[in-house]
Image (cartoon, rainbow, N blue to C red; front, side):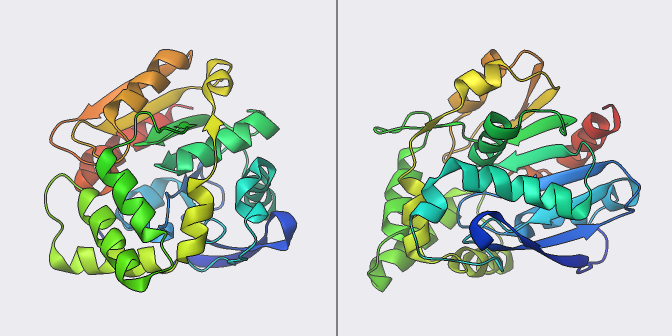
Length: 278
């Protein structure tokens, strides 16, 4: 880990006029990597990456998804339940920053966002994809999603503050295999709270299945998965690996939902090798 730097800050106009908060590190001439965080998170989910030597070799770009972090948070459910909005947000970031064939890295709910993008825009401006504890199927009843997350997420989407707070605590503490250090747990809870409960609910209502999109994916794919993930179960990663034509599954023993944090050194090494080869 090297000293934290705030990065270069951008405001990008996303789909439907939603302002997106974007940060980047590294040379504008380096291979770009676009990081897409998960449900009720923000760009700080990738701190172990942008505060590392990766930024000396690659152009690292992190976006706060609509409704998250320091991006705009309209309370219209259609702004979150329409696939084209998510897809066009990612396209808008690529265009605004001039990202040429970035590697897409999506964690957790970020897997859905990558699916949205690929289904609408294809792979013309994509070099490769890294799914990190990522989900690609959202159904009712849920499949390949942990029960502890389902229960906690429903609570965290409540309009009752007491219920919401307990749900947020449950989700955060289910994220890692080993208990989070107090300071990191506090940071994660504050980042989680930047997303309004109603928006968390809007995201949970989506029904998605990107299996067909994955089966047609013509780019290298790295699937990074903790074998103790209680949020997106390892069976989801196995499904992705069995579906994509050019996929490689990398399992992390004794790791939960955040290999990019729990095993940052290994994760950064694998990402550097993967991105450096495209």
